[in-house]
Amino acid sequence: MRRRTPKKHILSPDPIYDSRLVHMIVNRLMKKGKKSLAFRLFYGAMADIHQITQQDPVQVIELAIRNATPSLEVKSRRIGGSTYQVPLEVPPERGTALAIRWILSSCRNRSGRTMVSKLTNEFIDASKNSGNAIRKKEEVHRMAKANKAFAR
Image 1 (cartoon, helix red, strand yellow):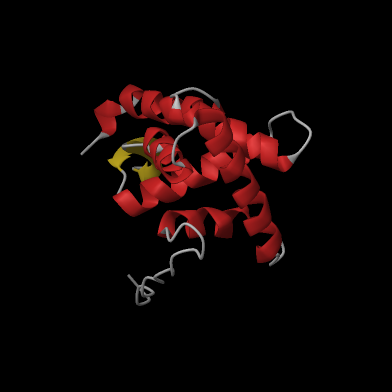
Image 2 (image 1 turned 135 degrees about the horizontal axis):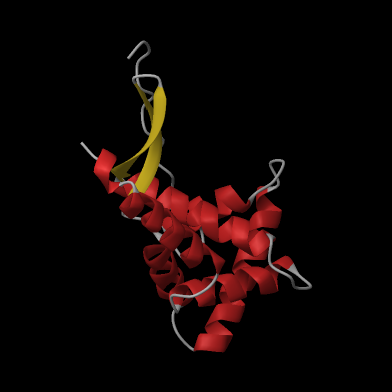
């Protein structure tokens, strides 16, 4: 290690649902520093999730993130001139960050009219263990299993 590791930035909980996870998702959803727009989109999706599932939307989102969180990932390592994909266990914070990233990228690639409806449907799908984010997680797990021989 050449440099010191930066200290972890602790997020404040969001104003309405009092959840740190919600604030993390809003920060990843935000583009070009437009946080109020990101909050508006996300809270719209939360209202829709509540209307469709008749459950607490924060719990649905927590379940979706938990379902999309990978336990293994592959990392490229150079050993003796050739590159191997080495499977590694994912620390909990990185797992959550990956899950949020995958859910948001898959909802951006989803077909639909509005971002609110795409967000709503992706979170509901992920909470039911389907959707593109879950497929991505399973793909990463398959890669890790295939390269189990290189695990140290």
